[in-house]
Length: 285
Ligand code: CA
Image (cartoon, rainbow, N blue to C red; front, side, top):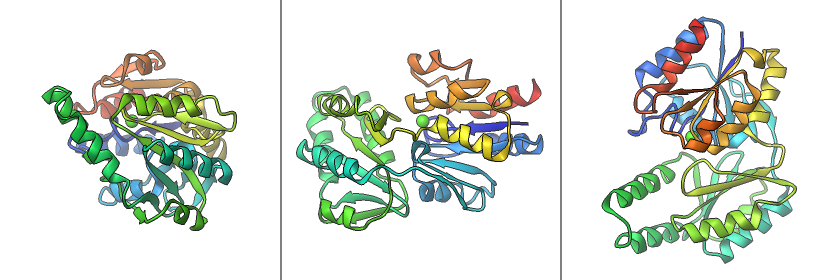
């Protein structure tokens, strides 16, 4: 028996921001077959708890792109925070470059009171420069980004660091390609950090040892489960590290070509219960 690791956004969650009954039933079936199901997401642990509150599923949770792992009962199994000096330097840079960012900590997602205005202004500026479809796509992503649970709003950047919580990752977000690419270029070669993306408009920085794949490896070791009998399902660049450590990987049909290239199989999209289909294929093989 192995692990079944499932990404959330664009994978288990459909475009209506819901988890379908089909997908929930497939998870229950996999568990009934003796598999251990783990959610692997960039979202914060407390945000994921909120999402699953009504489902009564018992799940391991890899959060913050692998910087945290929690057991179904909420015990912390792994915690890989960023070095403080790195976080402060990154936040300073993003601040100076007028890029919206969120700081993911143990108990909250910190962001500045004023900084949402950066995103609203970007969207306003883009309205007459993109197609109607593109503008809808942008608004859908904006809504999704700001609907996480566990936000804590601060007045100044210093307050975030005075809170002295462990910082797991910093998520930078911009609808303006040049701004985002400048950020990626500024941090992509940092030797102590990992940079991943989980949506078309973000990049996230974390400890170099933190990744969904490393967290999955760690969990398999702790639970004494075989990665050669495990499955990972995802749609984004931050899922590739999971694909690399398991024997069976499925990319969603809505994934980019690059992500699909790294997966062994392709399943249906997140709007067509792709997770359920992948799980049933895996457990009946
Ligand atoms: Ca995803």
